Length: 268
Image (cartoon, rainbow, N blue to C red; front, side, top):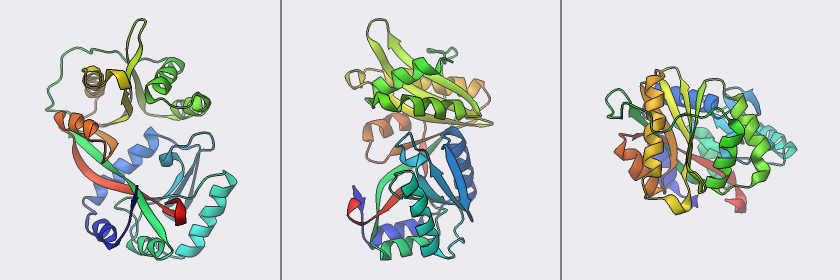
């Protein structure tokens, strides 16, 4: 869904929040979901991954509100790089994006779409069981098969997903909830990076939603993160995904900031 109009720009300009926190969460997010190719143009990070369609892996991410020189030239350079990968050029707008860049994009007919909430929760005071209901797996192939099934994604991206998971440097827990003979019920990836733990790719099988499988698996992942040394958990969720937001709020997650993607022309 496209997000248009002056209201969006005003929202973007006025909701920068805690920029040091944003920078830290962006940094751990990059490490938790690493792109195959990362280059910098000034402070703009250009992320590309030929084998996986994830927008987070295929976008330009400006990381300094003051870095707005030569916008048109740099956008065109990025466009050519994306064309080499056969990708549509996307710009990911966080509170770190320069205001002048957003104004320039809007003036050239770009539109923002897909709002995502980055949420955090304090693990130190969260009530969690003393034991893990699900132990993390170290079998990447088994986890990928379960994840593809639960997310109902194309099996063709399995090799790319394997490359992403093996490229993650921080400690990683691969969580799968399943019953014998019934297939996977829920999956999530927990990346523990010093005192921060990211919950990624959390999903519950369509026929198992609202039956407690997601709550059990999320509880196990957060418990594992805490005993591994994490004090704060973070995750990213589409703002229109109300069932997921409701679940995360029960675990104490609150919004830290939002981001959007921008693309040009009729594609938006």
